[in-house]
Structures are given as C-alpha cells and as structure tokens.
Image (cartoon, rainbow, N blue to C red; front, side, top):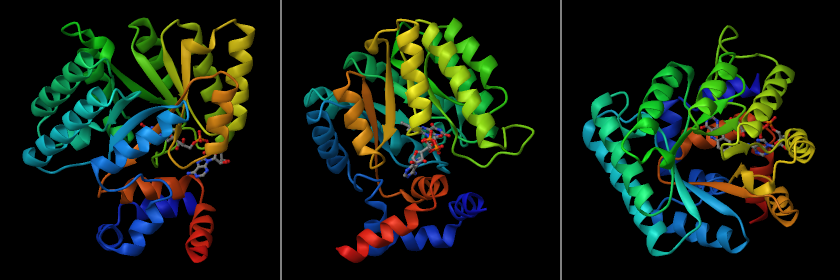
Length: 306
Ligand code: FDA
C-alpha cells in the first residue's frame, strides 16, 4: 500500500514543484542525493573513491519535453565525463533515455547518447543506460543493442535488467550472448501483474536465477542490490563456481547501507556507488521512499536532531 502511495506521489506535479523549490525538501533529499550541482556530485565522488569504492554519476532528470532540455542534459553528461577524465576519477555515468529526449525525438536521443558513449570511450569510462518503466523496456534494449554493435565504441555502453519483469530471463540471455554489460536490479516502478511478478519472493527468486546466468556468462556485469540475501547468494555462487571477485561488481545507491558497501570492499569485492545529483531529485527520492517507507521516519528523526 505505502509503496503504491509513494510511487503515485512521485508523479504528483504540485508536490514536486513545492518539494524541489523548498529548503525543507532539499534537506530531506540530502539523505539520498549528493546535492544539486555537478561540483557536489564530483565532490561526493572524490569522497567515495577515497574509501576504495567506484562511482557511477547520475544527473537527475527524466521525461524532458523538448529538444533543448535533452541537449542541456547531454551537455551536463559531457561535462561530467570531462571531470572524470581531468580528475582521474574512478567513475562512470548513468543516464535515463527520457532525460535525453527519448519521448521527444528518438533520432536526437540516439545522436546524443552516441556522442556520450564516444566521449566515455575516449576517457576510458562507460555509459550505463538506466532502465525506466515497462513502456520503455523494449525501446531501450533495442537502442542499447544497436549502440553496442556500432562503431567500435560498444564496450563503453551497457544497460539495466529488472528482475521483477517476467520477460527478463530472455533479455538477459540475449544481452549475455551479445556480451553487453548488464546491471541487475529488482525494479523500482509500478508495473501490472501480467508484466511483473507481484510477489517479493518471486522477484527475489528471479534475481538469483538471473544473477547466476550473468555470472556464468564471462561478461563483466553488476549486481545492484542492498538485499543481504541476494548478496550472500551471489558470493556463495561466485565461490562455488570459482568466479573471481574482479569478474563482476556489486552496486548500491548513495546513502543506503554504507556499512555494507564498505564491508564488501574490505572483504575483497568490487563495489560501485550510484551517486545522483541535480535539482530534479523528486521522482528519484520518492522511489527511494517507496522501496522503504520507514525512511520517512528515519529522515524525520535525523532532521529533528539537526
Ligand atoms: P529490497 O527492496 O528488497 O531491499 C532489501 C533491503 O535493502 C531492505 O530491507 C533495506 O534494508 C535495504 N533497502 C532497500 N532500499 C532501501 C532504501 N530506499 N532505503 C534504505 N534501505 C533500503 N531500478 C530500476 O528500475 N531501474 C534502474 O535503472 C535502477 N538502477 C539502480 C542502480 C543501482 C546501483 C541500485 C542499487 C538500484 C537501482 N534501481 C533501479 C533500484 C532497484 O530496482 C530497487 O528498487 C532498489 O535497489 C531496492 O531493491 P533492493 O535490491 O535493495 O532490495
């Protein structure tokens, strides 16, 4: 119920406008968002890198409504890639296609993403195309596959698979066959039961099944979860199959389970932290509350203490 409530709230324009322009909203979001500016995103990257963890930087935003906005977000990603190169950061970038104009002009979006991948390849970085709601799944996979095959820069792009989707096993098999790097997640959007498993137990079982296919594929994939059971199953499988710790990475979100992030690195596993920044933090923040409604009390308590 609460998950549905927060996901519905994530689409409310009035609350969004208030939250993103208020001091209170900004303070609340700081638990999961590194700041509103690129400098703050880069500063957080330095801090996380110093702890021995890699980073993926996300300039928050989605569903832009015109070509200028799409070009502006691409520009910001180019600046990030420049900063990654200049500061020799252990970082790559994550972007959403709808932030780069997917809904506005698919050809423009393709052009913008291609130039980002090209730039990432030049600075030895990487572009991860995040996965959005199910209306975008096929279109996203089609574009990523096309980009992965193209122009010798394909190794610098990968995408995301959501274990809650019933279709994901077939998608994982296909992406692995094409040697496309996958980030495996459970999935953060509201989806109907004919498309996605409604029960957590089925989503988790699917996650473990897909993780095993991915780790056996020999491609460098990412297992992105804060779920200790999923992590334990991944480690047990890697040990059993003699898959070395540098053959894949774990990923977690900024501000969530920092203890576990650092513990896994101490134990010799690779960890990448997803660091979001930007003024358009509201939908991202609401999805984090939807995943764990208890965060509302946690945030409120912390704010009262300050
Ligand atoms: P689950 O939700 O079962 O949580 C397991 C445990 O983790 C909880 O009991 C709690 O302890 C902790 N936890 C989980 N979420 C928390 C939160 N918000 N606050 C505090 N504790 C929390 N989704 C998507 O649809 N498309 C995408 O592209 C991405 N990208 C992405 C990148 C990275 C690096 C991560 C880690 C996640 C995503 N996601 C995503 C989000 C993902 O789909 C999923 O919603 C969250 O990771 C939460 O699921 P868990 O696997 O952590 O398990």
